[in-house]
Length: 288
Image 1 (spheres, rainbow, N blue to C red):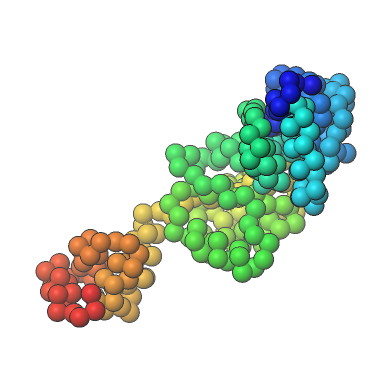
Image 2: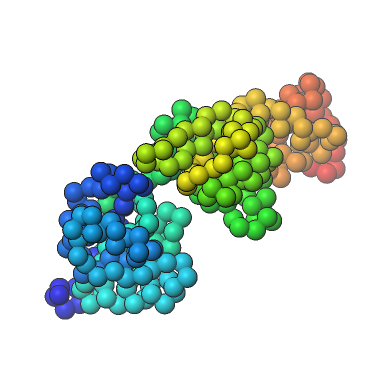
């Protein structure tokens, strides 16, 4: 045990997505030296530990017991124990309850040390062929229809590459929902990453959807979807101006946070009018 009042360390240990050769030497060492390993599914994690001849007590820590188990783990850390946190596969804290344990540890000034390692989102992204300069990780969409629609509506005008996670039984419905909200964009569906049947299905959301209508989805999926293109932005802007007079159009842009001068210039461009004409209309209006 550490010195009095000296907390232990919470290590975040990535585990292989499927190929056990992706386990790092450092991760194996940390797991062997830990007082305990906190795992989503102890039955799954024990197989990994046995493979690497690691004999450390396991703590069950998952979405359904985190409210109770999290504080218990923090108490052990405060007593000076070193705890390693793992997910079933990949990076703990990404789309799993590990993020809550990290917050609890930080609140108690417990050192949190992340280890680099496997991550499905980045693994799929770098092999997708889509833009990797700027991207947004979405993960799993919300479970309720209302919240899914609201989130996808926000993402529809997002310019960055989007990264989603999805299970095989929800894949086809999710592809259709994303296509309906975002349009038929370039996309890649990556499945069974690092495993024997690893596959990248590239095309558009529509063509990928057709592929999985003919081939039953199997394995966990990472979906990479292109952000909105400049042409789509122009088309969307044109649609948003349809049916609005110049005053309404300028007002709409100002409400979006665009200053009046730039709003007038944009409306003039979209309406095919001289900027001076739009400016005068705004001056004459008692609305703006």
